[in-house]
Length: 321
Image (cartoon, rainbow, N blue to C red; front, side):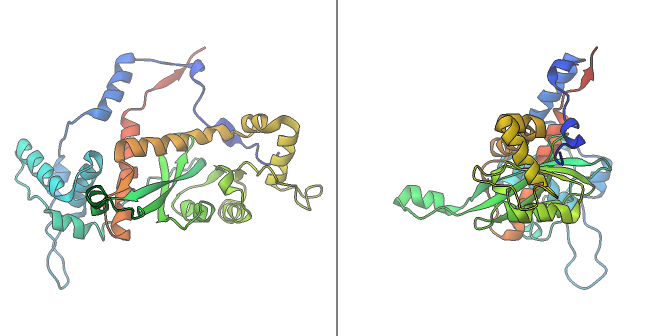
């Protein structure tokens, strides 16, 4: 069947076939997620101050590295900009570094133009797992509601994620308003992924013709693993030129939905749900920035933080006989 690609076999090997080789190393990796150890490399110290501008205009005082460092600590500790300024100052003082501390207004202004690097893509084909969640807009509204009992509707935006099924890391993220549906963001998510895609898996919200068209336009051989609706019927060309959705329907009719999930590898979609849960627990369920551009930078930095934490706390497995 079209959806039976090697993507279903390119995942984490089941736990019963592995064991942790070093329990001390394993525990240390998990403990590293909560470590408060901070250090500055020589390159970071030298690159803290921005390079002199050759054109007209005021000279920047801080490099993009300094701004990104401050915004990363802000995301990890869920701080306001003024609190972030104080945290950076205390860290530099404890380390004995004679570096200037970016103030809160500078952090807010520079976040508007900061370029967040994309997650590095590899040459190996990836199996993407897509899903979305809502993020509320933090601000004075919550305090006013508590004080005055206002019933004003909460403002929020939608975060769309694409997770690498092999590593569990966030491969791409897109932030939209609440009117954007899940299927319309498959194309933008794929545009943020460098390298080939072997399969894309999503829930029933992605059971749309335009989703399959977006995947085929960029990766013609990629499988689209999406459960058809309960009322779905085969296409007119199901007998002569069956599409992937027709193959899904045939498999469901023969094995049932649970059998189809096992055959297609649909159950791996739980990894992107785990990423969303980790986002809410570590980063929070809200956006602290006020403009669209700053919110996009905030989301990009948060995704990088979660990927780094996952890498630091990942246990090492080896195959056993």
